Image (cartoon, rainbow, N blue to C red; front, side, top):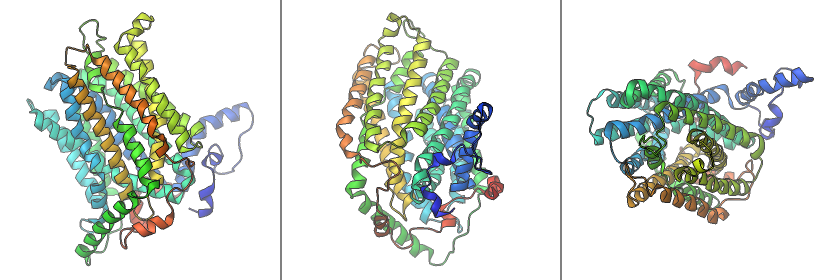
Length: 509
């Protein structure tokens, strides 16, 4: 990759013929160019960032996170409701444990960076995460009468497997965002497109599997994504590290990484936006379980949606999520961070009123059927959610210092996970305080109203977000040199995973 190409605007590359560089002319050629634009965009990313990097993003974000995450959401909701038969506030509280592996992402990052196994830093952790995910999914799927504590442990194992697989690709994204700042929004677009496409497939099939196999049997499908991670663990190309003085080097690297993270997070340019991202997630308390129990309850006047319809609505939401990515990629990636997050958070709070309208059944008074209204609400919330989330992800990559991109990005994702954990715990406390149960939803609307008020309250902290553009450099390179101890940075070949067995032919493009 030529450094002179780093400043080239990605949009100027999209839509051009890679071989001739000429744009099509005429109606049919313009139409063909529009259809082929995503292909040319992917070709550009492969050329600028490497085909192996692009393949890794699609695999991890598309299958391991997108498909598995969406399928898990629907299947686990029905598992707790129909198999374990626990109260919505209890489910909301138990879901807090599923975020713990994501809070521990800095630990996974340090382990994969500085604790080689048999000379390899990546392969053993892919193998471990894949095996852990398969075993956990198999246990919860085939064990009859599994205690709640054991079920939680198995589902945490599935979440841990996804988190560990996620750490390495995040490090590659952070590093490429520093090396190619003009392409940082495009990388997040690729992540979001892959995740949304995987989520579309997961949501579209989840209701069918739950209906035919039951919620417990459907969770067995969760063994497929970690199986592909095991496959990658065997075939990923990785250089073997030298083994002399390993213990001394590991201790120095761990100590230096921790000191570097602490030193970096103290800079105002880093901790202020990090605090905003935490508050924006934590204050948006989750009422999902209460709403799920309500709209799947078949006792009138509750909506009583079927399993297939719930999966279908989520699948439509996944399509809307991809539309949100397209809106961001085409229209919003050139706006300053503070401006786009201000309006996105405002829309996020206002769009929550659709939930309130649905819970209060005002949609029926307006003559809008439940099925149509919940589909509209899901689409709006997904588009707004994507537009709100993607600038924060780009901002996170911009806050990583040179030399410790993977570890520090994992720290920022840990902060985000703490925010989501706090939102789940806060939602559980609110549902319990308002006595929302499996059959009593009389005060559910108060929980949704409080959630919307807290979303709007986050706007008071918008001043913590920098007013810089999304392609600007926020953290000086000197900060990374100061924060990064000798030996923390690994070789370029080891830092950027090469999925040689899957995409080696693409390197010749």
